[in-house]
Length: 440
Image 1 (spheres, rainbow, N blue to C red):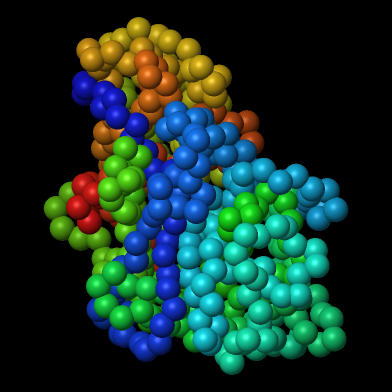
Image 2: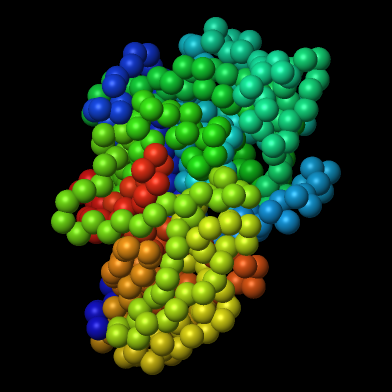
């Protein structure tokens, strides 16, 4: 049993700062690191000073639960751009990214999404776009911008592409009824390194969106896809980073004074004592997602088999996603898992004031929570209380898991807090290493 750590302690959305520059480094051999800024940090453009920490938590819960639809191919396929008229806080992901596009470089702010591929931003002319605070990218101002023709190989990599005046067009719809349409093009993307010169990636495929709408915030300007598909930022970096990236997410309570880190290439290698590695599986029907096999969860000495399968993933049974706050599991597993937790928690049951979570306790100094372990294939990941419980009010803490009937299971970012999580795409493995992310 462990003492519950009462400070609010999970990562919400964080922003990734990429700034323009020139030059090149051997990113595969040397590697580089960029800062990740918490979405609700005072440094984030999404920061709302009028919200309390507990309000931010509850907002994250709602985004987390609705994000399940983002991974549901049936929901995504049924989206009609005409129906996307709402303007609410995006559930596209829990992170923001700032990067530079073009020559000379033009800074944009987008949502970093490990659950999607395409890098796109709103572009001039943009008559059918959502309201955006920052200036729009003008492709005519970039010396390195090039539209793709309809017969270009890059155009054929898109599942939904069309042709207009021999210019390749893309159309992406998301499960929450957001959408983007525009030109498929290439331009230079530049990332700012924390310890070296900025790193540029020329001829990166991007989407230049001329008609976009749905749940996107006016403080953002698009999406930066970090998924497993061929057009994501990570995939397009290719051999220059050796197919490796990693991140270390700081606890929510540490967001003001510490930034999380995103590492690429040699800097992304996860090694040393305590490392647990599991196969990183590719989806046959949805190549975007990072899929793992979760065999069971242990609560103390009680092991509960995880028999769920993520619909459409082909292999594996749970998607690992940095953009989902909670861990989402099948209803039948949640019933057995939450019962095991309830049997071993030493504390008084309570109600979540927001009604979002169902297994909650009074946040007293003598509250004891059980040790919980996630048993992936080949990797036993021992979770601490900050990975399994969240404080939802001044006097209530809740289990950071939620049930779903959708068939989509997601290993969320609360469970990943204070772990160095490394993705080796070429080696097809994912590694966890316990860490103090405030010191990374």
